[in-house]
Each structure stands twice: as structure tokens, then as C-alpha cells.
Length: 297
Ligand code: SF4
Ligand code: SF4
Image 1 (cartoon, helix red, strand yellow):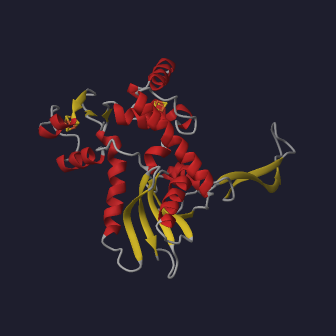
Image 2 (image 1 turned 90 degrees about the vertical axis):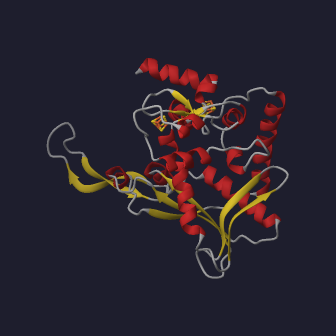
Image 3 (image 1 turned 30 degrees about the horizontal axis):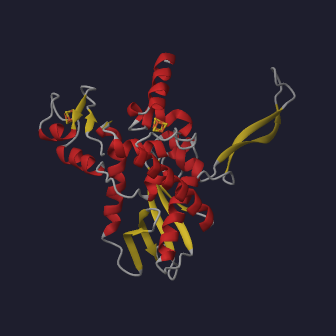
């Protein structure tokens, strides 16, 4: 079931999307009408076989999005249409030895890759994906972290007298938190290879949406766009993981029983339940987290 309502940013009430598009019930629209229509289009979800991205999300979240009516704040959905805009900008420039936006499927799932072919180097066979993301996620994906480096001086007074002074320096060899992106690209790779294509490299072109803010510089994000290589994961592991998630989702949909809560990583250690999950109001765990946060505030 697609999202059927907007949480109106002005009245804070839920309003049927079709009613909102027909006639704004607040004093004036919160966004241009074509933008609201585009947001509404981006929400349209089909009930058929789950896609790669649906399987990567928490099983309960995908189950609730497919079976319950829910409301979304149109302002918060703008990132989704930013992503579509980036695809549209590149779409008319894919002439040459490359494929783009093809949907492929197997018996587990289906997925539409962004780009494949000579996209980074001539003669390469690269699978590419566009992402628009936050400086925080980019910092984690690039493995950036800070360390204390001695300056060669010591404190001369105070509690730390005699101790060496340090300054913070960035390092870029930390753990790269890209598991979900890696699963997604590796599944597209498997789908391409099943069709007889060779994939030599996988790369994400990640655009930072808050690049111009000071917080991005504080996270060592110095460029608006980064190319992030993605490592190969074994086909066996990927298929086992995605096959298990597809089976759990199918069982839940067939029996109409809500699956167990999304795991800690999928629910971003509860931050998603509290603020970002569109179906949190339809999820008992999501309601509990929101209730507890409201009590603590
Ligand atoms: S256009 Fe915006 S402000 Fe008007 S009803 Fe719809 S969501 Fe509310
Ligand atoms: S509220 Fe949390 S546990 Fe419930 S569906 Fe959303 S992410 Fe999953």
C-alpha cells in the first residue's frame, strides 16, 4: 500500500494526498504544486516482488509499507526527489559504451542499476550508483576519524602540567560503513553477471547534500562529491542474506503477521524509529520509542 496521506507541515494534521493536491486546506501551499505532485509520484509502491532496496530495509518496515496506510511529511520526502533529479541530469548523457537504469530480476528480487560500462575509465566495466547523502554518512562511508597527535609541547601550568599537548588530526583508514550500499551494488552486480556481463569494479558517486555548511568541513568533507569504491562480497553470502530476507517478508505477507522488529542496524539504533521511519506510527515498537522520547524530552 503506498503512503496515502501527507502530514501537513502547516496544520500538523494528516491529509489525503489527493485532497491536498486538489486543494490546499492551509492558508497557502507549503511547496509548489508540481513539487508536491512529484513527491506523491515518488511514493507510489507496488505490491509485487520486493526490490533490492526494499529487502535491504528492515523486514518489518517493508511489510508495513506494503500493507498499511501511512502518512509522510512532504518536506522530508524532498531528498527522494533530489535523487530522481540527479538521475534525470545524467540520463541524457549516457551515449557510448554504457547502460543505464535497466531493471533486472531473478527468483529472489529485482533491481534497477544506475550505470554500467565505461563510466570511470575507458575500457572498464564499472557498475556505478548515484547517492545523495549527508556529510555524517559520507564521513562514516569514507572511514574518516580523528586522532590525537603530540605537538611536542607540554602544559606548563594547571591540572595537566607536565603532560604532552596534542592536536586533532584526521585519518582516512578507518572502518568504512558502507554495508547497505555494498549489498545493493553487489546484488546488481550478480544480476548483471547472470545476464552475461562482466563487472570489474563497483563505484558509488556520493554527493554531499550539506556540503556548504560548516558541519561538513568539521567532518572533513572537503568536496561536494566523492567516488567511493565498493568491494566485492561473495555471491553465496549475498544470496543467502537476500534470500532469507525475501523469505521472511513473503511469509509475513502470506500469513498477514507483522515480522519481528527491524534489527539494530536497520533501525539506526532507534533513531530511525524515533524520527525517520515513515511507518513508525503503524509499528508498536516505533510508537513505544516515540512515546519514550516524548516523555524524556
Ligand atoms: S499543500 Fe502543504 S500546506 Fe497545503 S494542505 Fe497540502 S501539505 Fe498542507
Ligand atoms: S519504527 Fe523502527 S522497528 Fe518499526 S518499522 Fe520503523 S524502523 Fe522498523
